[in-house]
Every structure is written in structure tokens, then in C-alpha cells.
Length: 437
Image (tube, rainbow, N blue to C red):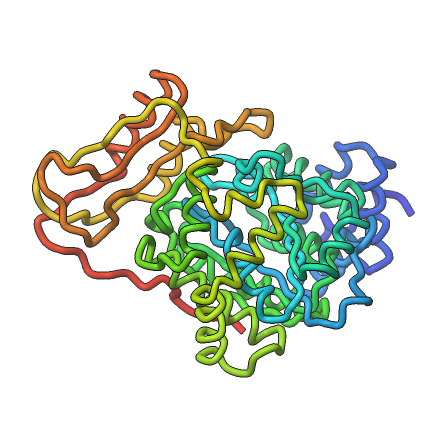
């Protein structure tokens, strides 16, 4: 089999077989064909989109290009969640330990942030000593003991995806929906889960800003996941404005801990989506039969302290200081410089644009523009006011944190463009637009 023949075959709009996709995935994983040929293949897929069946075959081939986690010894439903990313979307930090309290296993493999969207791994590493690169044996051990582990992609899990992901950016094929689906699901399939909840965002802070595009992606993800034998559904969720009050890394961990302590009024939108997504995870895993009972169960785990204890134990097992769960202010320090962003008139917070606020966070040091950029874990934004809340002239809307004056000034200048104060109270927005099954 020759790579050139497969490029030409896809260029000519012909269907590829499982054997051919396996050849391509192994070649990407092992580096046995040059990058220019893999790039040519990706462009052929961009111009002649893969069918649903081809997408499933490519996904499976990419997942099987390396090792696959197997949890045969764990006799519990295995479920995970994936978000297409947004601003303030640190939901996974609270979701994984919370859902694990219900007697399901949650092996959650996550990624780093790039651009205005934050990454779960960066947030976890804001806790000193927390290890996200852990050997497979340690993942198994922790899953048996605790039922939850949050970790980064290891070298031997879906290695074909790492290569093809980097080449998609270089070859101008990033927007290909089937390739997006294959990239996301190959990593999740390699985790060894039975069920998967997709959180597909739409709005200014989302990867897919238009609702129609998000719906198409969600449908493709669910259809492909089912072809792979996964129980899957997708929630289409709002990302025109930041989720919760925290944008950054240390402050998103702080918010997570406070929510798990039961302070749901701190960030009602974060809490609402946390319970909703957790309930769907329990239903698709088969652990619970209806959403209402699942919601009540999860709220109970927060109220009785079980969720916080699960988070505390996870931090301990992964090398962090479990005291962070009890005294987060001691362990999660903000950057040394701060600026109080104040209202220039009386009214209501009408809107805070998610993307603009997210990019402001990057300028402050909380994110990265390239994977080589260093993260300032203490940089970020705390929203003291959210959309719909009344504000007086001179009242603090947000507190911005950075480690140098220029970053602080640049971040504040951009953040000012994100905030809109209105005379009338805006209508509340719906967090979950629709459900794709």
C-alpha cells in the first residue's frame, strides 16, 4: 500500500476502507511517511469530506494507532465529557469528581488551552504539585481506588491524532468537520469509556460561533460516536458570554472549590450547567433513569460534602496538596498586580462578550497564543458583576490580575471593549439551547 495512491483515491472522491485508514493512522503515528503527504491527504479530505462511515473508520484507526486504556477490572459504567471549549469553562474541574460520587468511573483525558479558550490541564497545574502526566499503571490504580482521574494525553494514546492535529493547522484543513470529529473522538475512544457527553458551545467565545455550525458538529459527533459503540449525546450550550465569574487558571480552581463547598449563588450559571451536564452523564451511563432524580442526587453530593471530598482525594493522589480544598486562598494566589475595572455609568450589565474577555485574559498572561507560551497561573479576571446585575457609577465590575504593568494595561484596555452597560435589565439567556441524541 502506498500513501500516494490513497491521496489520489480521496482526491478523486472515492471511499477509503478500514485497512486504508489503518495504514494512514499507523503512518502518522510512526512517522513512516513524510509530513507533506499526510498534509496532502488532509487537504483531500477537506475538499472531499469523509462520509459518516469513513469518519468512524478514521476515528477508530487513530484511536488504535497506539495503546487504549482498558478498565475491565472496574465493574462500573465508564463515562466522560468533552467540551469544545469556551471562556470561563472550567466545568470539568468540578464535574469529574462530582459525577464519580454517584458510582460511575470518570477517566477524563483533557488538553491545554490555546488562544482565548482555557485548558483543563493548565487549570489543574495551577495547584502546585498536581501531576497531569501520569503513567498508565497509575491511572488504573487511581481509577480503582477513587473512580476518577484527570490527566493529559500520554505518548502512547492516539499518537496519530497528535501528528494529524498539528498538520491540520499547517495545511489549512482545520475547519473540516469530519477531521474535527475524528480528532475529538479518537482520544475519547482511546480512554476506554462506554458513554460520552459532548458539550458543544456556540457564540462569540466558542470554536463554532454560529448556532447552525455547532448543531452540525454535535450531530456529527453523536452519529460517529454511536458508530463506534459509545452511548453519546450532545448539549448545545451558550458561550456568547463567559461562564461563571472566573477567567484564568488559579481563580477557576478557586471558583470550582467554592461551588463544591455548596456556594451555588457565587456563580449560578456555572452551578446550573454543572448539575445539568452531570445529570446527563449519569443517564447516558445507565446509572440513573431520569434527569430529575440525577440532578437531585448530584446536588445532594455537593450539600453533604462528598463532592469536595472526592476532589480533595483526587488532588492528593495526583501529587497536589489536599489542603487546597479547605483553604484555597492559601494555595491559589492571584498575580501581584491588580486593577479594579469600574462602571462609568449607572445601569445594568447588559452584556460581556466572551471572546473579547477571553483574549483580554490572554493579554494578562492567563492564556497562550502558541503552545510554547508560558502560563501565568495567577493572571486572569474575576467578574464581580455578571449580565443582568445592577451597577452604580464607580462600582467595580471586574478585578483584573497580571504580573507586569504592560500586560495589566493591555488586558484592561481590551476588557473595556467586552463590557456593555445598558439602561434596561437584559433578558436572561438560556444556557442549554438543545439536546442532540
